[in-house]
Length: 171
Image (cartoon, rainbow, N blue to C red; front, side, top):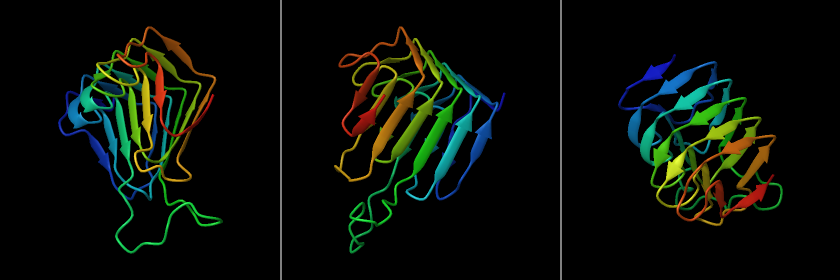
């Protein structure tokens, strides 16, 4: 596998990584037990990878947060302007037994999230999103989440057992 028992986890800022066929097992961090994507310019793709028994305060397996626009920047997501938001896509991945206080497997705070043909099994949180927590904390236009052909088994959360979303969400 790619990662096991590592601190810190993988941190991406301003890059466009493609991760394929990796295993992230038993990692621990404050944000994103396995992966922390912290950039509004990233295009992030993960395919055919497994996230098992990772732990974090936010996002047991993965944490994504787009930093706010710098002061004086033009408004984002207006008309034909690019939203400037990162795009993370996960396909054919398995998220199992990941834990956090919010977002058992995945935590997204602003940004675009695409999840295709993934399995979420026994992920757990003490608050929002047993499997996935998508919060658009700045009500930023353009932030969204699409979930397509995924399977969810036995995910636990205090406020929602599978998905908790405060942004645009389609399934």
